[in-house]
Length: 219
Image (cartoon, rainbow, N blue to C red; front, top):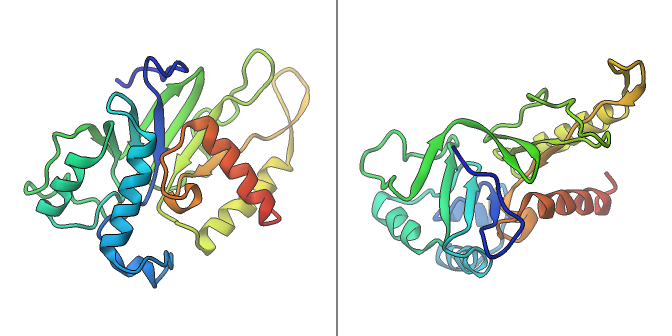
């Protein structure tokens, strides 16, 4: 069980990030086109951004595809990353199927999880879930209180399609159990590392990042 994240820096903070792909140098000129001069430069930059934000006692939920490296390379990486690590298993994560990889750095490794973050319900999956558990939940003020955090699709056409789905869903009106007409909530956030300049973010920071990114792109 993951404890609910606190808001006091004297306790701990919980961060989220996805698809770092440490050691996956091809992403510098293919797919993501990250633009680093080498795999080593990319790794060093991501490690610097991570540890500048995350303290040893903080939690980081990794939404899949952390490392493309060999067991010894990935072991060294895990030794250098700050924080208590939780892994939502991605399609490129080999930790759960290859005993050569170190797994003791992870509090747990799961394909799916639900947890609480400052009184909000969080759905965690490497793959985006369009109709997620608790999607319609609202608090006593009528505010939406469930978020679906995912990765996998990077910044691709698949992500554009997901954004279109969100716009259609949010623009759809339904009648709730009290007879009120309300817009359907759809709080799906892609925690792709490039969206945050490779920095793990809190839920509130991801909400702002997602909103500003979509506004800047006209979405």
